[in-house]
Structures are given as C-alpha cells and as structure tokens.
Image 1 (cartoon, rainbow, N blue to C red):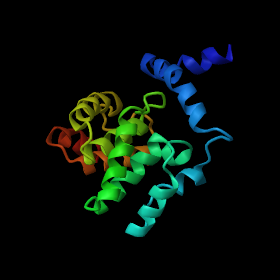
Image 2: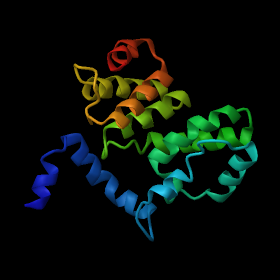
Image 3: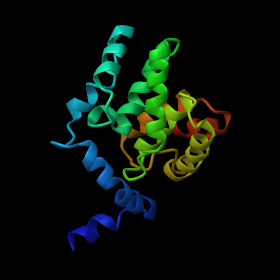
Length: 179
C-alpha cells in the first residue's frame, strides 16, 4: 500500500526511468548512499585552478560514486568550460557529457532534468536532442503563472538561472513569465 502512495504521484516516464536506472545507480554507489557533502565536493563552485581540474580528472577515471552522478556532472562541467582550451580537460568534459547524455535523470525529473539538459547544451554534446527535450520539459515544468512545477522558490530560481544560461530565443517568453 505504501508503494502505491508513492507511485501514484509519478508520471509514467518517471516510473519507467526508475525501473531502468535503479540497478545502474546501485552499481555506481557501491558501499553507501548519496551524501550531499560528497556531491558538493565535486561541483567546482567557487575558486579553482586548472591544476585542480587536472587533479580531479586523474583521481576520478572510474565512472562510479558521487563524482559521476548526472546531477554532479551537470553542475561541474559548465564551470570547467572556461578551461576547455586544454586538451585533457576538453576530453574529460566530452567524456562526462557523453555519460550524462545516456543518464539524463528522468527518474528524478523536475529541475534535475533541466540542469542535465543545460550542461549538454552549453557543452555542445547532443545539443539538438537536448534542446528538443528542453522545449518539452519547459512546457511541462513552467506553469501558466510562471512558477516552476516543484513550487519552491529555490528550484524556481535554479531553473530560471539555468534557462537564462542557455539563452535560447524560444525560451525568452517562459523566462519573462518566470521573472
């Protein structure tokens, strides 16, 4: 009965994605659950150098754990784009975005999907497909009153800033509505 109360709020796409991704996520998070601090340590927000990026690349070659979570990649890669002229960093960005393209967080939905698509578009990996998915997600997630479907100020601002970063002409009306 508890499962029914959980599942009844999900869209079919989320249910199918959870079935598909659950075993994959379990393999990636061997030895423990997800911890917010562990995620944030991989975001590269704030000050960092090219040497910091190289150290991360050397340390995290295996696609497991919080370092390779789709959301973590979606936050980290746009920060790394300032160093995309470095061939090692460029190759890592491409590898991470290719991984992300195959692991978009449809199982979680909401702002996570928009964050994933923003990273793909800014990194120019499967950008056309990501833009098509983004148009669909924006229609679903941005309500008539301009609010975000998750109805929290934090997620509203996250999504608004992500859409501003993408800066596509077809998003301007939705962005204006959200402001």
